[in-house]
Length: 89
Image 1 (cartoon, rainbow, N blue to C red):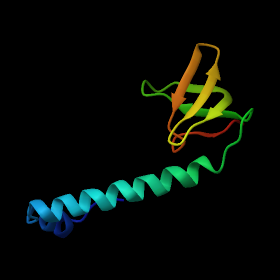
Image 2: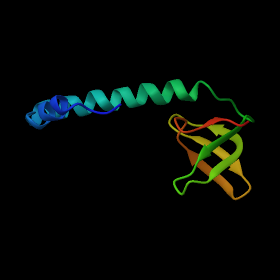
Image 3: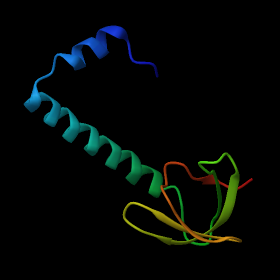
Image 4: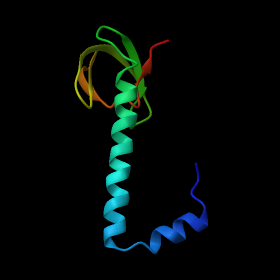
């Protein structure tokens, strides 16, 4: 979703207290998104994700933490955000 010019102009007009409130609301929303994503996975599930370098990584979930998922790969364990994981094909 691209931000409209009007929206970005309004953001630029915010004062310190408004920015702090907006940041708090954004953090809460990110947390909700992460929690929903965590609920889609289970231990021993095969998953994949795109690494920062563009590679498709895959492995098996070994542990589900509050905010991250531990995935065992051929290269070793990776701690991954659930929002970028998807079930392996």
